[in-house]
Amino acid sequence: MGTNSDLDALTSEPEESWAWKTRETVRWAVSGPGFTVALLEGKAGFVVLDDQGKEMWRPEKHDYSSVWVDKETKTIESSWYGPISTTAKGSSSDSGSIVWDYDGNVLWKDTGENRYMYGVEGDGRFLLWDAAAETLAKVREPTDPGEWKIQGEEFTVVDDAVYALDGDTLARYARTDGSLVWKADLSPGWKGIKQSSEIDYYANDDLVVLSADRTFGYSAKTGKALWDASGSGDVVATAGNRLAVIEPGTYDEKQGVTMPSTGPYPIYDTSGKVGSLPFSTGTPYAAVQMVKVEGKGEQVNFGIDDGQLFDAAGKPMGEDGYEHAFQALDDGVYLLDRATVSFREWHSTEDAWSLTVPDVASVGDKENNRDVYMQVDDDRLIVNDKHTVRLYE
Image (cartoon, rainbow, N blue to C red; front, side, top):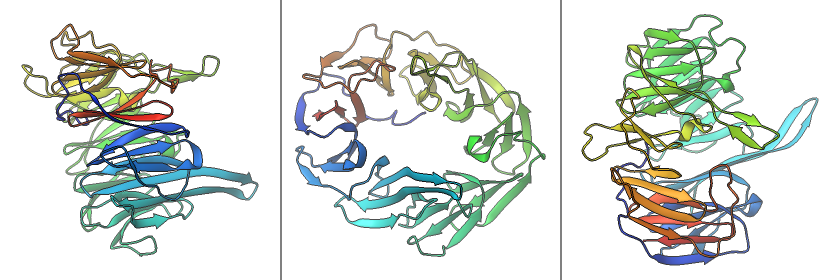
């Protein structure tokens, strides 16, 4: 999904700056400004490493399901969820979210069941999603009643807007003060038998796409119903300020893998369907990246599963040969094949460089043909296997 395409690529072979080794199991690592966060398996939590690969600090231990670095707010955000028991009276879980500054000081902590930190705002406030109360609120701390509170079963937050889905109503609110911008009544029964958690939607500056038993398009500015179409799936951003709906793959229990859906996947703008992406994928949210390829002008789509370029309408642009693509950038593509990392510039038939990570304890990702994981940042790569995190610059 169109992230990080403007990062500076390593166009010549990098060298290993440091390697951090542990007996614990590393799930993956993510880069921050002058540090690296390594997420560990199970309740070991995570560790923060400095720019020399030395341990700086560790947080309290939880089985974190997500940990990410927010460079705009200069925070490290995390959450975890694990069921404890299920009885006739209901279920209980070990869940919560914590936000740290870069030095490890806790800025936010909430372990309330069914309450989740949705995001950190630019003014230092937090968005708190209360799944039980079905509200999203802007708060200073978990016990704060909130500067504003919005009712809804599901939310999506884009730029200066909060979109809330509440029963048969879709509404837009101002992100700054929670005031109502517009509210649209949906047709009764629009979601068929689907639960709210099975409904996917996303918005940009022009369009809100809501996908349930069918796919519906609404004006982001007015809430006016623009069109509806057959089919459903995961809504993802694509080139040209458009949105595509990508059907999820199906899990094959015998093989233990997700079988890809076959496409093509429709692309929409405010007028309705304007094209389609003709590829197959088992990972909808990671299927498309948006890049600006030198010599191609406007932003185009890169199909990460098959290494092809597509214009904003989904027409193939004749660029292939990027098997095992991991990350597309404006300059080219990072490739990851088992434990071999390489970089190929656009329009080239050969890799600019290639290196194989040594002494790998495999992460065993056969589905994606990977023995290691990789995270891309400006002029640097964070690569991890099962017990080692390496920085290449």
